[in-house]
Image 1: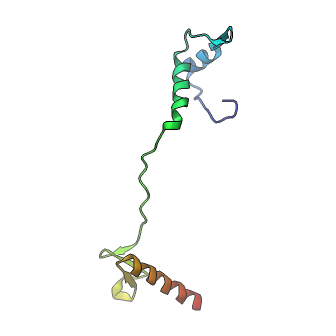
Image 2 (image 1 turned 120 degrees about the horizontal axis):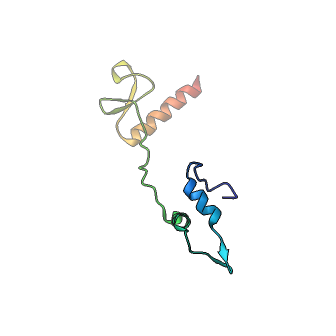
Length: 102
């Protein structure tokens, strides 16, 4: 808490009251009325085992009939289309070369 990495909401009065009463007797933690402190300690210690199940982000492409459309426009209007990863790579390279030539 002193480093600012652990934060407790101000409205949790029971937690703060128990925190103020939390003390040591003869070098050992006094185990009376420390339910919230024990739960907090347990939660902090278990953070090292925490995992997130956030799925990887999918890349979004502008699509036209399930084909990647590059260079602005649909295939009927002269835009470049690519279906395989190699075709996408080559189409991007072609667009880059054209823009560098200008």
